[in-house]
Amino acid sequence: MCSSGPQGQTEQKMLRIFCEGPSEQRAAERSADEHSEAEAPEKSSSKKYRNMKLEHIGIAVKDLAASNELFASLLGQAHYKIEAVESEGVSTSFFMAGESKIELLEASRADSPIAKFIEKRGEGIHHLAFEVEDIEAEMKRLQAEGYRLLNETPKRGADNKLICFLHPKSSNGVLVELCQSIKD
Ligand code: CO
Image 1 (cartoon, rainbow, N blue to C red):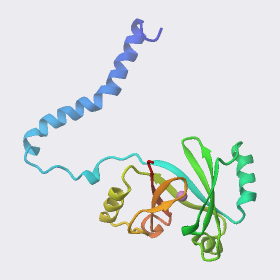
Image 2 (cartoon, rainbow, N blue to C red):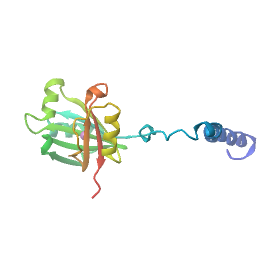
Image 3 (tube, helix red, strand yellow):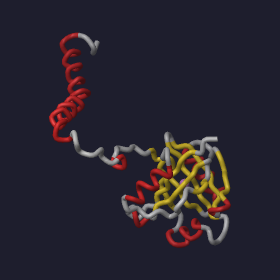
Image 4 (spheres, rainbow, N blue to C red):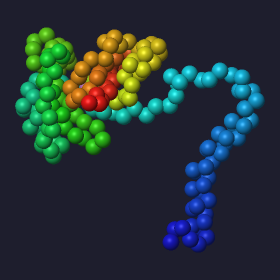
C-alpha cells in the first residue's frame, strides 16, 4: 500500500532524497574539487571514520560470587563464564547484554589494580572496552594522536582477547580498553 499511489510515490521520492541526496551532493563536490585536489596527497588513513563497538563494560566488585547473583537477577540470565587472569590479579565473570557484555572484576590478590581501584574509589564502573580489528595498528594510531598507553605491547586479557589500556588522564578520567579477539 505504501509503495503505490500518489502518497507512495511521494514517500519514494522522499526516500530518494534522504538516501541519495547526500551521496549525490558528495559526488558533485568531488567532481567540483577533482581538479583542485588531484595533486593533493592522500588523506591520512588515521582520520578515517570508525564505529568502534562497545565490547564490554568492566565493573569492579568486592565479592564476585555475590555480584554474580546480583547481576544474574538484574539481567535475567546467569554469567556465561568465569575466568581468572593471574597476570592481572583478577577473577572475572561475563554476562551478555545485547550486543555488548558486562565484565565483573574481583581482585585475586592485594596488589591487584582492582584492589587499588576499590580502595580509592569503591566498587563501580572500572573501564569501557572497545573492540578493534588490529590492536597494534590502533595502539600506534592513538599514541600518535597523543593518547597515553598503559602497556606498550598488547597483553592477554580475559575472554580470549588481546588487550591494551589507555591512561584515564587521556580520556576524561575513563579507563579505556582496546580489545581484539584472538582467532584460534
Ligand atoms: Co575488560
